[in-house]
Amino acid sequence: MAYDFLIVGAGLYGAVCAHELNRRGKKVLVIDKRDHLAGNIYTEDVHGIQVHRYGAHIFHTSDKEVWEYINRFAEFNQYVNSPIAVYRDELYNLPFNMNTFSKMWGIRTPQEAQDKIREQVTSLHIENPKNLEEQALSLVGPDIYEKLIKGYTEKQWGRDCRDLPAFIIRRLPCRFTYDNNYFNDRYQGIPIGGYTAVVEKMLSGIEVRLGTEYRSLMAQEPDIAERIIYTGCIDEYYDYMYGTLQYRSVRFETEELPIPNYQGNAVVNYTDRAVPYTRIIEHKHFEFGKQETTVISREYSQEWKPGLEPYYPVNDEKNGALYEKYAERAKADPNILFGGRLGKYRYYDMDKVIRAALDDLQKI
Ligand code: UDP
Image (cartoon, rainbow, N blue to C red; front, side, top):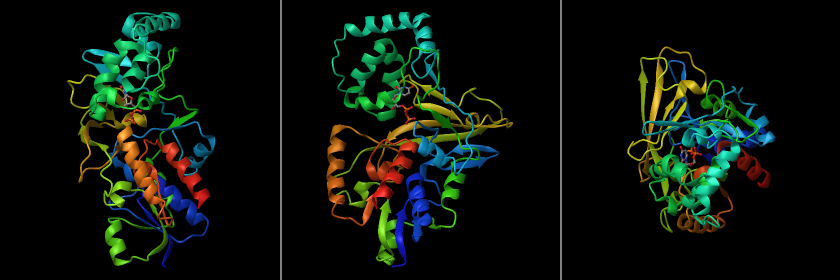
């Protein structure tokens, strides 16, 4: 066989695996069906602005080893994510913090905010939150749920908040300090020069074939590698034999505007259901850009269907059970390792992808 490992997908999981295996002297081939590296963390230079083509990616982690690892491939800037939420003509800070509560209720102290939430939540009698709606209501009460969570979540997931898992809303901090940092993590930033350069560096010295479909390669060279690391959708790999897993896709409307500053912040969420997009990203603000023009992307969430890009697994019970069947089936193929968001069907952040890749490689 020509290669020890064939890695399908040049995204973050595939690139970390390729880098580590190559470092250990393995012969590695990376393929990707797209004509560029970096999967969904791909960034592209538009007049000096790094545009996140497949959605905004902000690196954050509390895992020191992962932070040190990614810093070997890039220098990170001091960006701290502090999104703004727009609900009709009202504007709030995210995540849910004293700035949000103060604007919502005209209060000032943490005690007042806690009392307000307790007063709203007690009457709801939610013991163990079973779904996203109950989780959100019990964390912040109905005022914030109705204005900042319900509409956004239903647009983002195309499902009723009662049909979504509670963990999705627990991604967001809720704190009683005047702190607009969207993440609780110890480390955060954007790689200077963009994510594509990070992946290029990981893959330097490794053979990569872009524009290459896994199936056509295997049809031509079935014995090309000893083992396979597959980062595409696991259900697709098995020809949907147990049925299709659900994913959410995103359509981006990206435009360059002849003005230096469109919205004054990298991320502005539109939480009202009546606005068709979920958020507008102004890419230059991730890097404190001073260019004369700006590039913005409106994000429209939609259900995935063949032909679209899958972005988010829909981790509800039904899909969870279906994924387990595929994971069980995969055990019969010990020469294939499934990884990344699509291979593992998990709503992974980038740091968790790196952690999983490093841990999975230990097991090989
Ligand atoms: N969310 C919300 N309102 C917001 C932002 C987020 O209700 O203004 C909820 C929504 O359900 C979303 C989840 O929080 O799916 C997680 O948000 P996050 O920003 O982590 O989503 P991502 O950036 O991964 O799309």
